[in-house]
Length: 509
Image (cartoon, rainbow, N blue to C red):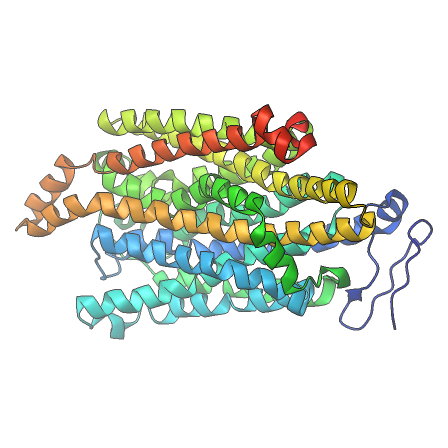
C-alpha cells in the first residue's frame, strides 16, 4: 500500500510496510501543524536517545584511560592519548558511510542497526579489558589489545551523521536550525553523561576511604556493562516507533554534486574549528587536567576520584549551548554567530595558556569552559549555515537557468543533507587532530619520565614539566585566528560574498 498525501488538506499519513512515508511536505504549514509536527517530534526523540548513547560509547575511553593504572594496566601519556584518539579517528571515518546508510536502509532501520553495533565496544570493555588474560600479557600486547578494543568504540561516532541527515528531512526549512541543534545537543550530552557516570560506576563496592587514594581498586567491567540495557532499549524503540522518508533516498549523485561545491569544503573546515574542538577537547581534557594540574587533584581527591577532574562540565556546557547557537543563527545569521565564536575561542585559549603558565587551575578550567560554550554554539551556527547556503544556491540556479523550482529545491536539499554528513566527518577528524597535537606536545615529558629511574624521580620530572600542553594550545590559538578570518572572508565580507551568492551577505547566512 502506498501513502497518499494532499499537501493542503491531508491530516493523516499512511505508511507502507517498514514504516516508509512516501509523501512528506513539512514546508506546507497546514500539513505540518496537522500531522507533520507530531511525527517529526517523535522521530526526533528516539533519534536523540540513540545518538546520545552513540556519543557516550564514543568517548567512553576518555574516562577508561585515566583508570587503567588502577586496573593494573599502566600506560604512558602518549599511549593513553592514542587510546582516546583511535575511537575519535574511527568515528570520523565512519561518518561518511553512515550518512550513505540512511538513503540505503532508511532512517528507521539504520538507527536500529547503528544502535545495535554499540553492543560490541560495550562487551569488549566489560569482558576483555578487565580480564586476567590481558593483565598477564607483556606491555606491548596489552597496549595493542586495548587499542583494538578502543577502536570499536568509534562505531558510536558515526551515529551523528546518519542521525542528523535523517532528521533534516523531517523538519521544514524554518525550523531546521533548532531541530538539528536539539538533535545534536541530545547526542553531545552523552559525552557529559559518560564522564560523570563512569567514574562513579567503576568504584561501586570500593570503600570510600580507599577510593580517594591515588591508587585504588576499580571495576572497569562496569563501565561497559552499564550501557548494554540502554542500547537494547534504543534499538527496540527505533524499530517500533521511528519512520523512514522515501525522498530521503538520495542517490550517490547528491554526494558527488556536494563534493564539487567549494561551499562544502569551506563549511567542513569551519566545522573542524567548532565540532572538532568540542569532541577533541572532550576526549583530551580529562587527561590534560590529570597531567597538568596533579597538585590540584591531589589536594581535591573528591574531584579527582568521583568527578574525573571535572572534565564532564565542559561537555555539558557545550552540549547545552548547541541548540542556542542554532536558535541565535535563525535570528541574526549563522556566519555572524560563527565568527564571534571563533574570536572568543581564540581569546580564551590565550587565557588558558596563561592559566597553565601560572599553574592556576581556576583560570585554565574557567577558560576552557567558555571555549566549550563557544564551540557548542558554533556547532549549531555552522550546521544552520549549511541548509541556508544550499537553499540559496538552489534559488540562484532557478533564477539564472529557469529550472523547475520544486525539483531544484529538492535536489539542493539532498545536497545539503550530504554536506551535513561530509562536514560531520571532516569536523570529527579535527577532534583527532587535537588529540594528536596534544600527544606530540607530550612526547618530550614522556621521554623524560621514562628515563627517570625511581618513582620519586618520575613524579619530580612530571611536576617540573607540567606546562607541556602550552605548545599545543598555541597551535589551537593560531587555528582559531584562521577560522575566524575564513568565516569573515567567505560569508561576511560583502564584496566577495555578494559576488558568489547574492543574498547570503545581506542575510548574514
